[in-house]
Length: 132
Image 1 (cartoon, rainbow, N blue to C red):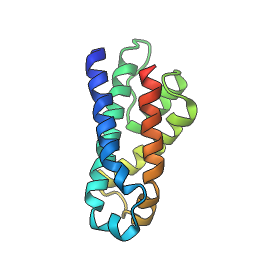
Image 2: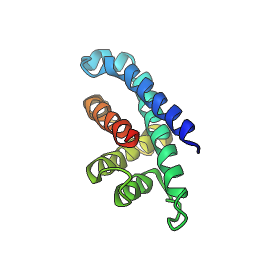
Image 3: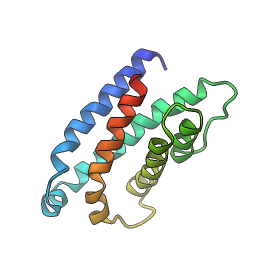
Image 4: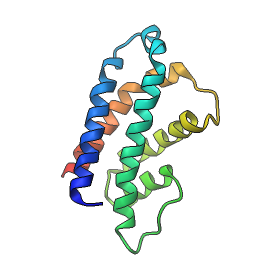
């Protein structure tokens, strides 16, 4: 993945964040009317971020390719690509993606609603950390 592609993916993440921001202060009722949109935005954020992280890790020949999104984010923190705090936060968010996509568990919509500010914070930090 070229630096231009990484830049484009970071721009996509920024766009998804702009689309998610109106839900940050939305009531639970408003959120529930559009929860599928929020779910999809969170999924897109995680996919774009993990694409970048997988690429950066695979570019290091001595690093084996991680087996999951969670492992990739944790490895990015261990390798100094992301701060440890951010890599841990994104690793936890990867579990949410699995629930959203694969329906491994019932979605706790109250928790999903409450996670919007954290997602905005963490993916904004992801953009900042990778733009250095």
